[in-house]
Length: 374
Image 1 (cartoon, helix red, strand yellow):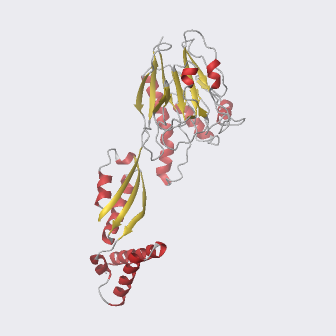
Image 2 (cartoon, helix red, strand yellow; image 1 turned 90 degrees about the vertical axis):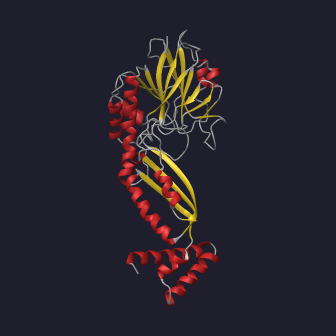
Image 3 (tube, helix red, strand yellow; image 1 turned 90 degrees about the horizontal axis):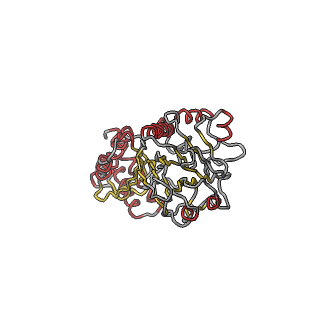
């Protein structure tokens, strides 16, 4: 008998987004709960038997009671079984978000998998083997017990864990709460549902990260989705459909300005492939720019800040290179012109902080000229 479920993880409800101030940050926090509600509706519409949450449903064990209540409300559209695994952000401590949820009263269809005990809520069709974290960093592999776990004959075996598959994650990902890459094979699992890595990724045979359903960082790791999984029978290949559910798009653009103008930066923003209101953009600028173009860039970026959900600008490597027209605009004769020429020479010939101070002084003189029209 086939078993269909959604695999999701790393919601991190309550994430503060301290680098995104004001209403924009508040909307990012709120959207994470809205996305959970969309996952519940998707599960209802696709008629799955369960939703497996592979850790870090909450950003910490200190989230407010109001956040817990709003999250439980978001689960309501799906009346099937929810299985929540404690991860490193919401570990199953003696007093945790999970103990508070129980004290407040859990819906009957919500299972908190905070013990390494097989979960059979589907009349023997499938069994979920959880590996809950009871502290942020576990020194012992919590999935080891899967190998010897006894399950009914003919049932589908699904592992649920949160951590790093040893030596397999891309780049410099943290290797904490390690999970052997062959755990699914050794434990005869039909599917190993993982959390911790925030992108969608098949990491080993029958072993998948679903990623976070709502992106939260400028990283190209295929986040913003859930996995719809169907297993026809024990031993059958898993059928995995990756379904996009995220609302916000986190985009990074690194641009070199080479002709003294800001055109490349403005063209890159205009070419963003998504609804601007849903874009969280990091714009990294390097190269050289004239003072007049620097002023134009500032005006244009201010307008873009209003159009985008959030715009973060790093222009620390963008160097002012005043043109003759820039300097003439400040002053052409007398003491001011002499000061301008000396600052220009220092900006070109000095090093480090002294050169930066000279460039800043020229920029301020130019902006003062533009502001006062003199």
